[in-house]
Image (cartoon, rainbow, N blue to C red):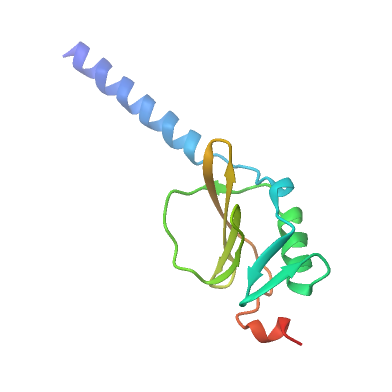
Length: 123
C-alpha cells in the first residue's frame, strides 16, 4: 500500500510539473516579425498603417504569452510563410512562427481597439 501511494504521489508531482511548465508565461520573438504580411488580401509592409499598428502592439506585449496546442478558427489574420497572427473576438491574439525547432504557437488577450473590418486600412 505504501508503494502504491508513493507511485501515485510521484505521478501527481510529474503531472503538476508538466502542467506548470506548459502553462508558464512566455515571451514571443518579435525579432522574427517579417518585413511583410498578407492582410485583407493586400501585402502590407513597414510604413503601412496595419503593419505598423500590429508591430507596435506585438513589441509592446512581448511578455505574458501562453503556449497553445489548439487550432483556432481564422479571424483577422496577418499571414507570412514563417510568422502568423490571428486576432479573434475582441482581443484574443494567436501568434505562431517558425523556428529551428518547428512552429511555436502562443496566445494572449490584448485589450485594444481591434478593427473587425478591412475598410479601416483601405483608405
